[in-house]
Every structure is written in C-alpha cells, then in structure tokens.
View 1 (cartoon, rainbow, N blue to C red):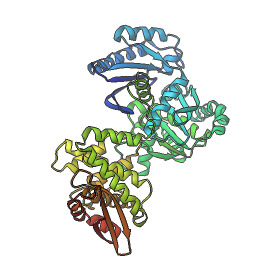
View 2 (view 1 turned 90 degrees about the vertical axis):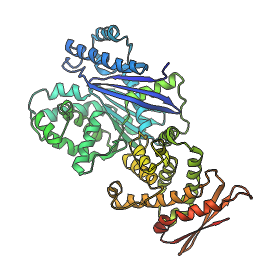
View 3 (view 1 turned 30 degrees about the vertical axis):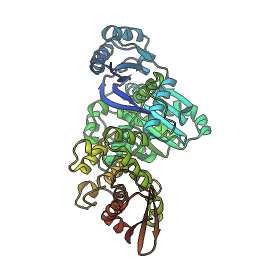
View 4 (view 1 turned 180 degrees about the vertical axis):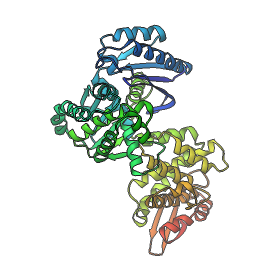
Amino acid sequence: MSDLVAALDIGTNSFHLVVAKPVPGGFEVVTREKEVVRLGHGGGDMKQLSDEAIERGVKCLVRLSKIAESHEAEVRAVATSAVREAKNRSDFLKQVRKSTGLEIEVVSGVEEARLIHLGVLNAIGIHDRSMFVCDIGGGSTEVVVGLDDEVLFARSFKLGAVRLTDRFFSGSALHPSAVPSCRAFIRSMLSVVAPEVSELGFEVVAASSGTAETVARMILRLRGEPEPKSMNRFEFSGDEVRDVVAKLQSVATVEERIERFGLESNRGDIILAGALILEGLVDVFELKSIMFSDYALREGLLLDTLRREGLIEVDEDHDAARRSVQQLADRCDDRPDHSQHVAELAGQLFDELDETLGLAPESRKYLEFAALLANVGVVVSHAKHHLHTYYLVRNAELMGLSDREVEIVAQVARYHRKSVPKPEHPEFARLSASDQQIVRTLAGILRVAIGLDRTYDGRVKSVSVKISDAEVLIAAKSRGKKADIGLNVYAANERKGLLADVSKRKVKFSEA
C-alpha cells in the first residue's frame, strides 16, 4: 500500500495536482501537474458554470485522477471560488464524482486563506515575524496576516484575474477607461479592511500565485537579471509592481502584450487584471517590499492533510530551510554522523574567525548547510562527487532559502574538496563579488573542518583559535587523552590553503 498523498487544487483559472510522500516535518514532492482550465470563465461573474467549462473541468480531473491513481496516492481535492459561487455547483460535483470517484471539498474563502498561509509559511520559512500574505487567483484574492501558525486576520475578496478580465478587459483591444475603472473597483473592495490590517501590523510581505510569479519574472527581465532556478523568496518592491502595470497598460492588444513581454498565451490575457490587483494591494496596504512564495494552496493542503492523518508531526523548530536540508542529506549521505560532526567543527571555526574574516551572521547557516550536504553527490558516484553535490543541491527543492542562498550553499559544498573557486568556473563567475567572497571564505573553513575529521570518527572534539596579525593558530582537542589525532591535524594542514588566502595570514595547526 502506497503512503503517498495527493493534493488537488481546483481553481478558477487552473487545476493543480501535487503528489508527495510524507517525511519528518513535511513532504517530498513526487510529481506535479498543472492544466489551465478556466473553469470560471464566461459564467456571468461566476454565478453559473457554463456547460463547456464543466466539460473541460471533468475531462481535466479524469486525467489528473489517473495520475494520482498511478502512484496509488490518496487524493484530497478542494475547489475554490468558481465552484464555491456557482449556483449549479452540484451539477459539476456530481459529474466529477461519477467520472472519477473524487469527493471534492468546496472550501470557504477563509479556509482557502488559511491553507494558503500554511503553504506560504513553509516556503518562506519565517516564523518569528508577523507576515502579510496575499494570493491572487482566477476568481478571488486571499489576504492573511499571521504569526507563525496562528492566523490573525483572513479575508477572501471577489477579486480575481479571470473575473476582472471578464468584467473590464473582455474586448480585443484595451479601452481607455478600462484600467481606471478596474483600479477604482479594486481599491473600493480592499479599502474596507485596510484599518483592521493596519492596526494589526506586519513585518514581512509574501505573495503567491501565477499572477505574482508572472509579475516577478517581468521585474527580473526589467532589471536585466538572469532567470533563477527557483523564484522562491525572490524580493521585489511596490514601485516595481507599479512599473509593470504601467508597461502592461501601454500595450493595446493581448497579442502585442504576449509578444513584447514574453508571456505565456494562457496568461497574457489575464495578467493586466492580475497585476492591477497586486498594485491595489501594494497601494492600499502600503507594501514596500514583497517576497514571492513558490508554495500556495496546494502545498498548504498537503501539509494540512498529512498533519490531520497523523503522517507527520508539527515541526516545533519551525525551520523550513534546516528541515529541507536535512531531508536531502538523509536521502543521499552515506556517512551522516561524519557530516554532522564536520558541521559542528565548522561552526566552531566560524565563531572564532567571523570578525577576522568579516562574515555576516547568516553566513553561519550557509556553512552549516554546506557541511551537511557536502557528500550527497556520493549517491551518484564517488568520483567527482563534489560536482555531483553541486548539481543535487542546486536542483533540490530547499524551502526557506532564496535562489541566491541555495546557490551559495551549493557552491560552498561543491568546493569542499579538489579545486578552489576560480574565475573560469562559470557558476562561480556568475556570482556577485560579495557572494564570491562568501563562497571562498566558507569553503576555506569547510575544507579545514573536513580535514579535522579525516578519520570519520569524531575523535577531534573541538577547536580553539588564536589570531594575530600574521597567523591563525588552530588547536585541535581530542575526545579522549589516548585518541591519536595526528592524521586529522595533518589532513587539516594539507587543506589550509584557501583559508590562508582569505584570512591573509599563515594558518598553523597543533594538538591541544
């Protein structure tokens, strides 16, 4: 019997399926599927699902249910605003049940907001500061203010990219009054709750959904920045959102919009309405900086289901980044005790050297994660496993880290052995000068820490460091009086070159 669980999000614009297996504190994605269905399109402000929309929806769900069935996954399916508001929703639900056997939960707007918040919280990984979360769907927009798992405010607005496109932008060309009318309508809806949200306050802003991702990718292109492997935790400003709206509304037709901005055809017609909603959120709630979340309703639904069925326990540490790093290490590292001890020794060295090397506090986390993941490439092959490590870390779904942070961790792990970072290495060359220095410095520490556990048995218990203008003296203390740590000290000494370069001092080792 499979222990896989599938979350099926039946949205107004698109349907999403995620199949995953439970792991400690979370889940590991097995497969994802998405289809644009436009269930809520052309239904008279979504009061009625058209026969054509019902047919599209049922056919799509037949396909998605077969994918879940092929994995023997238990499916939990939820429907949002298009089904929630339709007077003939029972017809749709009956046809789905007859064709697929699926029992669909029609969730309330507030429950939808709660599940979105749960997903975003685990992607962003910020549990100690209050967070404003917004998700712009096809039929509705959800706004949540929460602190950790607690939802302080939740509201669902009948503002969606498909809904407002049908209402304000249904023509083939943009009418001069369409944008001002749509903008005024959005603000009139959102302004009602602005005082309540303002009174609560928030420290972090996160946005999820296809609209937010499309706007974020447009901002990337406008900045002239390369496309990251992951958009998770990508930050952009409220002013940049306004700039995107100005550019979108300067184009008269959908076809020209798709061509000029490189949009997908199924997003090009609804992106102006979606971007106007995001602009309205920025203006009404005075959002200065926004962070994009890769997770949304479907991932929140997965987590909620796994917790409800007792398949995972709530992570008391609330550290999504550390949890996802540990999950990758558990899958791939054949010597986890060694990696854990190296991480501890590297942390001690960091604490002793941080002021001398000019390291920012968050760099300690990058060093720890790189130490835990340095050997995951062995699962592919021991030969050149440092290169395999880079690829595995770079392409893993490490939640709670931005694309930049994943890149830093991957490169520090990659340079734990063999060649030091060089300008001719393409990935290293693409880093900013400051990030190159972080990678060089942390890799220098990691290489030494690995040498100090050359015997793979933790016999070097701890290190102490004395620093002068000319030297860094590192004393290794053995776990027991009779423990021979000569090989470990020798190995660390052989690996000291990069640390000597970044510290601009001679590095010497001794036994304490």
